[in-house]
Each structure stands twice: as structure tokens, then as C-alpha cells.
Length: 125
Image 1 (cartoon, helix red, strand yellow):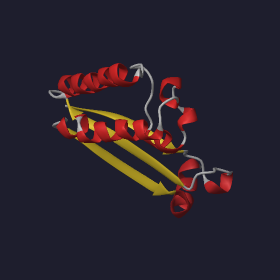
Image 2 (tube, one colour):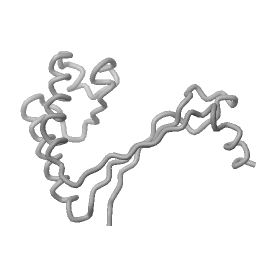
Image 3 (cartoon, helix red, strand yellow):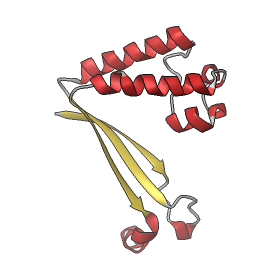
Image 4 (cartoon, rainbow, N blue to C red):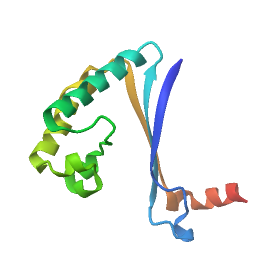
């Protein structure tokens, strides 16, 4: 069995209905049931390292886009970091845990809403 965490970006509203986004995206992280414990342990190890090095609590959410350009939307402990430190965190994750997570896959799909609006309208009826 595989486990999947899915998150969305954008909204499912239609452009003609006033939706501000032109895309709707879904992305998921997929891990096999036999690898999930090792995956969680590696992620927790990285979060413990973040806490010890930068003082970032484990429950603080990390969003790459905000870490690059909108730190005021992030946890207070991250807002105080320099841009260089925030980029170093991203780099450390990309070079560290994300490379060692065996059996973990990322799946993503997106829809350009304007192209599919007519079909979506049929489904809403």
C-alpha cells in the first residue's frame, strides 16, 4: 500500500466566477507503507537540526516561496533570519533529506482553468 499527502495551490473556482487564479494545481508526496517510518524519522531529524541551528520550532510551517520572497508570512523565528540563512535552509534540505528519501515520489498535476471551464460547468450542473 502507498500513502499520499496531497496539497493544492490555487482555488477550484472558475475565472468567470471571479476566481483570482488561472491555475489549479495538486501535488502529492507518495511513500510506500514499508518506508514511511524511515521517511518520518529523516524529516524529524532535519527539523531537529533546524531547531538546534536556527531556533525554528518543529511545528513551524516551511514554505519555500515565502522563505525566498515573503518571510513576513512565516513563523517569527524564520522572519528574523537573513535571506542567506533562509536560502541555506532550502539548500540543506535539497542536498540532504530530500536526496536520501528512498521510495518517495512526488506527483503533480495542474489545470489551466480557462481551457477547462466549459467542461467544469457541465459537471456543476
